[in-house]
Image (tube, helix red, strand yellow):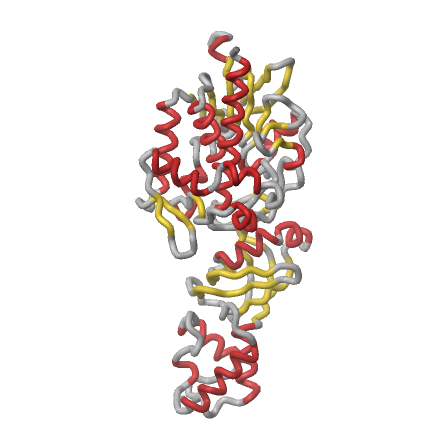
Length: 416
């Protein structure tokens, strides 16, 4: 390639949601020559696998003050950016580009096709139509700044220059993801997993994989969360667990993922209210066998029977014959079940990292580095992470959009 073919107005490092959307935005607002460099075999990998292959695009939450409550890291800093680009804007952008979204009961939003390729096709078509180029299997090994130009060296041996750089390398677990920020002396907080499930070896849940409850409460010594809860082969998962793993990411890391979690399978019932419910069943349904059905809505028969077994209640025991000790033990299993956690498991491939470039080092209106003109950050490489439910993608769309608009404004000024 000639020198001119190797020079770009914007090079995006990382072909995930934030990087691609940032590139598209910059092009939409007039930045002419854009290249995306992706070290993996394809762009938009997380988009493809997220939401079980359906892609949880965003969340139906249109008040920035409420929206920021879903970000364990970044919530204080994100109000301004979300005023500039929030879920309503994301929905409009995708609809304007031919993708309709739908809202599920819990507020999560997906394409009506229930297929993540709908989102990928939309983004790649937009990028193609705007003349954006991208290279896969092309990681950045070095990034330098000289005068007003950035120099990049890649794993393929190429040497590129650019007026502007958008770093969107995703979570900073790997050395490759840290290179662009660290090469330009940006401090990165230590990365730890944010969304993960709990490894638990306990006979109370053995053989119950696939059993779920619609609304549970999970509590550790420092954090509490609510939502659906799922029993898996290795322990506990579901939004209630993933949320608490996000809010407690640093604390749980420091404990080496050895801690106790208390589960209220009913969500909000107290020990007293459950005991009162049992008393009423003894009075009104004394001849019923306890293990036949749970008096609590949402507790499946398999889970209820296991709780009865744990409480020493045999199949033939009726409500009129249950002892006070058995009632109290069963009530505690419902609302105060304590489990020992012995490690973590990644939530399939939908991992999120806590840690990244400090938001104090970034101008939040533009996502531009305060130290290096023309250097921008977007997505998970920043010290931003949300709970499960579409919030991490929304942060990617927002930061990518603001960075792309700022790049376009900058290149417009540079070309004059």
